[in-house]
Image (cartoon, rainbow, N blue to C red; front, side):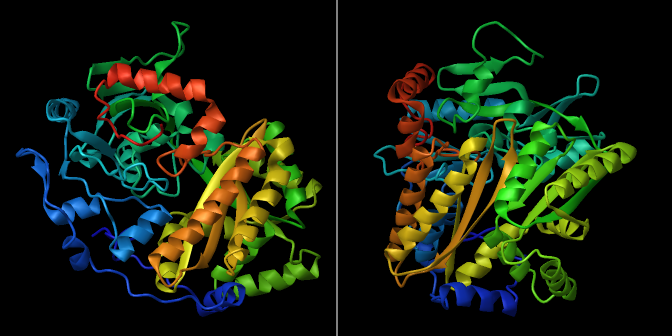
Length: 529
């Protein structure tokens, strides 16, 4: 059973080792353990549905609670305090494009707002209902999860958009193929959600971002259907696929998508390298990417993330002795961990691993083999479960990310961390702030920040702490020429910053396109623009 007020399956719990808790309390002081609202307490506050009667729509209170929020920190604060505010008036589970069209027609006829819902994993408010005089209908696409067609010679697969990461891979791998899209939310996030938010998987160096694999599909709108033709290339005007990518449900509801897939690699491995400092590591990975090394993944942690990772690993003797050994050979407190992945044929993969490790050694890296890399692979989709554990211990956790050109990566990394530190100190609190580079390009990279701070005595105070942190970091990101989001999207949390990044004219153009396909403005109002 999925948690209603946290991340993931209720049966999965990731404990915090005593040594890790000691480390956290040393950095931040003991957390304030608070009593959260129960599901029963929240259900009492669910208002009566405003939807006209329809046998396809579920209006019971628990279904509406479970679709009221996503996975952002403000969502967690609202859910666990019981102060959710606005609930969808009902939930419809379509199983086909024709049922989506029927739902849209029902909404159009009755002035109902529609929120497309995939896996509910949004961390920036994509699926949160806004206060509105119109009833709100959530379209949960999770029952639309089938592989519809596979063209092996063209390496194209057409799937329904509600397929979760595991459902996508299970069906493709049965035919010897993979999409290879592995975001941290892989367990629950969906194909349609990845496209609607321009998602990026952890092995994007090899498999590509979602826009690299999205080849076509079907979009349902209040004004009709839009068929996005699958072509290798076209000069027939602007590419509408690029407009749908990142549209967050404002420009239509994607019901199926044709994706470029790859054969399952016969070999895949993950390896680790330590650098003396972050700057050396950044220079090494930049050269690795620009020289065209055959890698599927790079993830370079700064010193704070490296230390936190090792501390959270617990009292494993191999980790303890490994840290001692690193100190003895000069990799001390400033050490930074790089994990790199190689995917392909068995012979080529070994050669590519050796080429990569040789390059990293030539830039001061210390190659330590596969143990840390394989441990990371094993736990990479379990990491979000730590949020549940930390929350119960009295700590709030959030992330933010951006992408910048190489010349701005280091200055922005420093300034964003400093802005977060200054914002939390202004509230007489402390935060554990760390970062990694996680997606790489010829001209730049993305920086992914995590920050942990103590929950306050009231949800309002915790929210205020988050708002101060988010505002400070977002302003610095824009001042440094970074994007407000590399792969989390816009939603409601980044809404104020989009006109700054895109420009007012560009946002107006998007709004005009939205009006053309959605004259009544019923599709996911309040999101993106």
